[in-house]
Structures are given as C-alpha cells and as structure tokens.
Amino acid sequence: MENLSDLKQQPYKYVKLQDALKARIRDGVYVKGDRLPGEVALADQFSVSRVTARQAMEALKNEGLVIRRQGAGSFVQSIPEAPTQKMPPKIDKAAPPQNVAYVMIDRLLDESNYAPKLHAAQQVMSDHDIMLSIANLNSVDLMAGVIPTWFRPDRVDGVIFDGPVQEGHVRLAERLGIPYVVMGNCPLPQETVQVRYDCYSIAQEIVEYLGRLADQPIVLLVEPFRLHYTKEIYAGYVDAIRKRVGGVPLLHTCNDDGYRGIKYFLNESDGRFSLFTVDRMLGGVLKAYQEFGLTNETNPIMTFGNPRVLTERQRQMTHFAPMSAEILMRKTAQTLIAQLNGEPIDTCTQLREPILPPTTGPANVDSDAIK
Image (cartoon, rainbow, N blue to C red; front, side, top):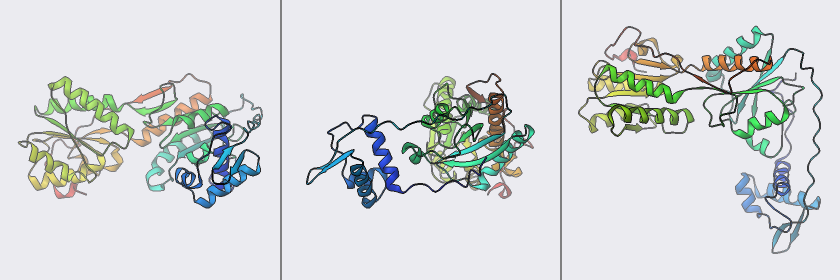
C-alpha cells in the first residue's frame, strides 16, 4: 500500500470547478438552456478567484457543453455523458485484511491531540498483523469527484472515519465496497456503522447522580453547541431535569474557560447549585470556586470528558464521567476488524463508562488544582 500522506498532486483549481459544474449539469441541477451563474457568483460560491471561474467556463465551452452569449451570460448547450466507471479488481475475500486507513475528514491531524487515539488503533491493528495508515479527505474535492488514488478496495481493506463525517463520506465507501466504521458522535443515519458515546443517557445519569449528592438546582455549563455530542448532552440534561423537578433547566454557555459562568450563576441564584460541566472548562470553574469560597461539598461538580485532560489534583476536586477517546478508538478498531472477519456487528454501538467519584473523596479547591 502506498504512503497515504504522499498523495498525487491535485489538479488545477479550475479543473475541480469544471468537474463540479459538469456533475451538476449531469445530475439535472442545470438543464439544457439554463443560464449558469456568472463568474462573480461562481467565485463566491466555490471560494475561488474570478480567473479560476473564467477558466472553468472556458473549458466547458471548449467541450461543447456551454455556449457564451455576449451580454447575456453562459448557457447549458449539451448534457455530458456519465463518466465510465472502472470496475475494481477482484479481491480475494478469503485473504486476511492487511491494510486499514485512519481517515480524518476536513481536518489536519494534530499529533498532540490525535497521538493517543492513533496509538490505541495501532495497538489493536498490530495484534491482528494489520498495517495502519493515516490520511486526510477533503469534502470539497470529493464533491468535485476528485477521489484519492488510494481510496480503492484493492489498496485499502477498511477505513476508520474521524472528524465531521457526513453521510456522503460513508456512502462513497459503500459504493466502492470498502468496509468502514465511523468514530464519534456524528449526526448520521441509524444504519451507519458507528461507535459513539451515549451522551444522552450519560447526561441523564449525571443529573440523577448529582441529585443524590445535594438537593439543590443542577446547572449545566457548556461550550456553545458547535459539537454534536454537546447537543446530545444538553438534550439528556433537559429531559432529566424536567423529570426530576418539573422545572426549567438552568443553562449557561460561554466561550471562556468557565470562570464567567460561575460568576453568572452566583449573581442569578442564592449560591445553592450543583454543577455539570465539561473537561475544558474545569480550570476556570475551579478558579472561580477558590475566589468565591465555594467547595465541592456545598456545590458538587460533575465533569464530563476525557480523563487525560485533567491533572490528578483536579480529579480530586470533581466527580467525573469519563469519555475517553482512546477507549472509543479501541472499540472502533475492534468493530472494523470484526466486520473485516465477517463477524456480526451492531450498526450503531453506544458506549457508556461508569461515573467516578473524586479520587480522594470530596475536597476543597486549592491553587494547585487550577490550571
């Protein structure tokens, strides 16, 4: 298998735009006689320069697909034929899998963030004598019909998708006959082969847990809802709060480290609350706890996220609901291997890990726990 990070040079931008417009004509978005968007509109829509848009339209004209009328614009003149599909070479299904790709969608692989996950996947694959390669896939290229040369069933036996995976990505793998598993809480159809955290149920369990610790309002402090799993946390929290007290859930979102969220709760309440937050905000939360004299006994904290993010001292300050990326990756890799070996698998695997109390019991916040 070729090195997935050493891909062939991509075509010129105008060729990608030319192919994208041809696909839209072929699919009936633009029919014969329709006026195509102008250069300015194409440049804005596809994030290219006007020169690139002009080159793409000129190429379509040279193919006889578009006619340009002075002062009126460009119009569809003929419909392109569907591209011929090369049949993939026959594969010996009895042969054991040898190559699996870890594919990040629309993101660059940051070694510091992804090394633990990659190490977990590599461990599982090496136990089965399978080589793990890494690659990126760009959604814009795929929409334009630019598919990497390695993304073929004779080059790769299976794929682990990570990042903002969309339905089109998995449909491409299915069309090419490449087994896949999606890692993470992506908004995909139920039949998609996916390993994810059951964030909705975990949030409900956290509300019940905090309710047993202290009989007081439970507030949720999270980032803005840009991540799908955060939306699931919120939905589970809201339903659990309504079942428990029949009231309105208390919520605050912020872009900082959580410090301002605690100030907001103190200003809006009598100081009696339990806190449900995410790992990235714990440092600011503990800073506010120290400054305003709060403790984990009077205002219990439940943190949800990756245990690797927290220091040992922070673990002594909070109850913790783990969401380990390494565990998620390990289960994802095991699911893919089971699929490659023809074993029955669940299309959507939901993971839950047990809630962990503070490592040394409830403790007051000190400066060593604040990062």
